Length: 396
Image: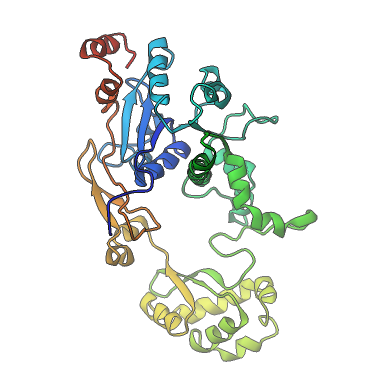
């Protein structure tokens, strides 16, 4: 790296956040140098802190999405807490919130209510379904949006639909909020004014669902559920190997199909077999072709199969478990892990994707609940005596 100046140095973000979508967005802003002040409820905090205890007593989701932030506890139902929040907003660049539908507006924190007071402020609202429409006030969680967006209907086995193994609806919304805020900061540089971002989890997921949507265009049949295999390309998916492991492989065109027959399963005649001579025919006859590939791999080890696939330049992967990913040789070789402090000690953390040659991303501590309350309020001019009163009155 050539320096330590980060693109969002000097940007202050206030976040009324919980769960995943908003915290994932703001953690990435913090990665790029922004100061992120996470406003949490006194004593309880972000409810994601209690999802599990898998990281030495801390919640896995929370550790992932909250490093490099400052935790400020405020009871926003209290007028004094509201005053303190507005003192912060007067100096802030961005407000992010993913509270229950309508909650921020009821507290006077809508973009319309804030824009005249703080014209520089960018306001990002992350909701399940967006502002307006019949679903505006409907509660939304990740699994529910996976379902509403159609994702669950095309995921899983032929016998049963399935959700994704991670919170992809939250992740999608968090990514669009993050990139939207970056755009809003660039726009403010041109106009001098903050703008409003309305990020819908449903719309974020439906954008990601455009392939199956267009595949099912004008009433056509949707992609069938195919487990870990590709629904419309074959062979593309998992195949058992003789040593009890599973290899994932993918063929994209007819040239690769011919090479696969010749150099991987050693059955060159299959390349011209009328049952398998095009991708559509291979998809239609996938059961028969699956049996042939399984038979070819039945006496081989994973290393032998991978060696053949690599020699033939056929894309492949091992089906790793979490323990394998922690020890992944590529991540190790590229030095992608760092250590960050936390209330439970030093923890490993993955460097954010998209390395920039000119700066290192910020990777600071995961905060304890209310850890920075006194420091932040002292910056606002709150005396030690008043801090004590605020604590006694459970405002903080």
